[in-house]
Length: 356
Image 1 (cartoon, rainbow, N blue to C red):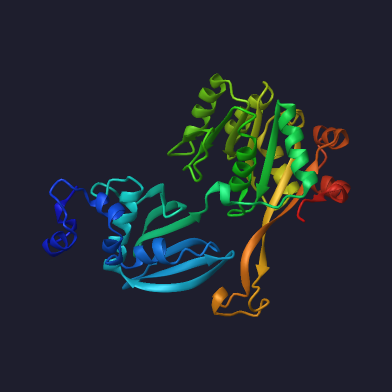
Image 2: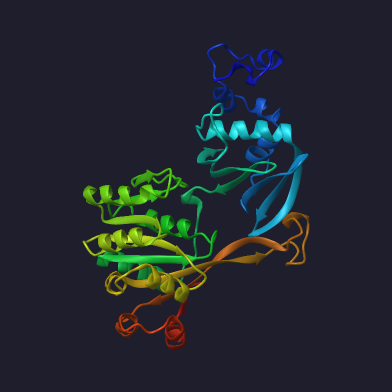
């Protein structure tokens, strides 16, 4: 590690030994971090659980910080570029990345002060663009499911040879929901997950980190030799991965998978367009769950906006679910090639709201 990352004055102030690394100091001396301004503020001072993301947008002369509070992106602070570059290096060290050779196109994660953080960095015209997502401990999360929906998920898990499909827009919490459920099941089943990156550390579950989504196919093949009962496979992006997932679920495994879509029917439409043989869908999927996040009104101002809620009128978000059981008739229509518009018109009345 470069020794010039701190100067002589700081060495004397914090009693840094010749053998002590830069990252050692971050973990032992909170006072040092106070000198690092925005890092200390984000990771030690402002631990508001309603803030899910920090966005750092580089401009010509400075860096603008925005926060996603209760699902809404709002302006937060502006800092100088020099402070931002120091901040980036500290974050990279926590992500165990090489700050000397790094080209700032990075995905990583780390744990600090009771939170897990997921980091995405990439080069842009004016400098590095960074998004840091704040994630709570999985044990601290409580998702209020409709009891019938949770019952259906457990029933489909017990069936084996099934894929349980979770759908929703980007950032709607699909991965969190899948991991929340398998965390409840970990004492009963052998569970493997494929994650890029790992967001929640869950004891008793085999969590496999991957660096690129291209690794998912190879890792899934290896997992099948590990005698798993539940596989959390992540997002279905292309035909090859969809085929592997359906093969896994028809050979005695329960697969939890996700897909980006705005509704149950758009998820079904994406699947139909991805797979060559529609029989794969009807053989392996009995339930599709769609999830969206709904903002809750601030209890202090009743939604009008105040200092406590950053003048958004919001006080967190809650998941809103709908789901559809693919019964025999729906599956017959899928095999017969009925259009997604006809399917929706014919079966939208059987959608079940899973929110309380």
